Image 1 (cartoon, rainbow, N blue to C red):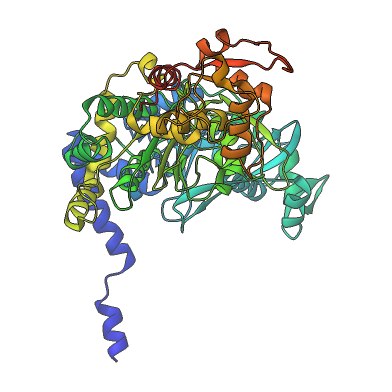
Image 2 (image 1 turned 45 degrees about the horizontal axis):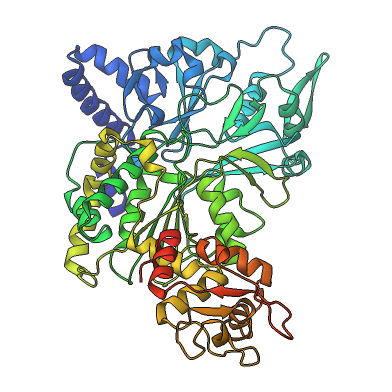
Length: 584
């Protein structure tokens, strides 16, 4: 029959496997300059997922530097619970966080998510996996195997002083690992229908695997939960950091480099140097002290703000999080931020968003933050979050007159809508450009003292102007138009004391007149109007001469109001500029 002929023509799985082994054997023999026999033994060992001392491993925290299995087993504490590439297929998914190494109290293994879930063991420790558990072990070998399988997905920890179960999984649709913290009751109920056998005297009995695993001395256990990028995570702590997914590789990212220089920084070489240094620090010292400065891009749609942020974010893998609404970082449940190194706020906030202002500033500067998941107590973790912001709005960030938290860039619109330009840029970045950018940033020098001082850009001054408190807004408005009072009190003529009541910018004015102009005209219908005292406290900060020049003249029927000697408009503009940086 046709079906029979088709079956006979199809190579068997054994033949395909043999062909693969032969191909890998020849390849390994040439690479290592070893005999065909020796190479085949290594390949067959790998196929069985048993690693030998000379096999190479690529750990994320070593940025792609290869180490041997012997190196790892000689210093297991340095590699325990660290992510790495799949041992058999290091290039799988282009990721260096496909697998995790676990020491397991002298029973080491590597759990990989490549092609589902694989576990690699070590030839040096083979006896540990054959049920060598001692004559008095209460667990049959099958139960030991079941418990080891539980350890691949679950662990126990203390979280805020409470016992919790960690559930690790991999979301293939999102291409990232997920971590959930369960109460033991939920964990126990989930596995209530799964039993394992344990020894009970001369017989065996079936017990819930959740209960057995909880009491098993080989259970994965951690003292606490941390997020610690780098090589020095506290011992016995569960580290939420999964490492960088990419290997840095010398290559070409010139189109993105030019995009940063000519578009994002609009041709300003000083701003480009600052931006590149800021980027370099985040990849060279992700677990170091933050400079406390966010990169802010204010510009039109389609100029390439998001192209830069998202390709840069690929270096961080799961530690990069784009957010498009303020609820993404201001909501009650913010646990998704706990494992972030880079957050991209894309049209997620505007300068007048008071509820978001405090949380935004905390993201940028605070070394420790509280993170909370639904149903789980909040946990205080170190924060290594860096922030990039992008917006089309005029008012992007709440910048104060002495602002140091925001490096505000005004990207050029020269390539807005240029489809061919962005197609070429994306093609280069998708084909080795990100790895090349990562490589060069690791070599880029930077000065931390410089990074702590955000450049005083035109864009920053615009944001300061937008963010001025109402008292300074009043003075900015008056000084910009050269007109101070729209209404003069004629009951007690200022002219009698040398002033001119008709001047647009008088040389004398009653103090209460100026405040009334602010309260009744400039702030008419507004909430949160400053009191008389608060108004003048803010005013004296820039207008020092005004406070020194006020008098209380006396005349018949006077209640001895304060009279101000008003400096010239130009003189007060200079004082205002010196205080705020805003030019007229």
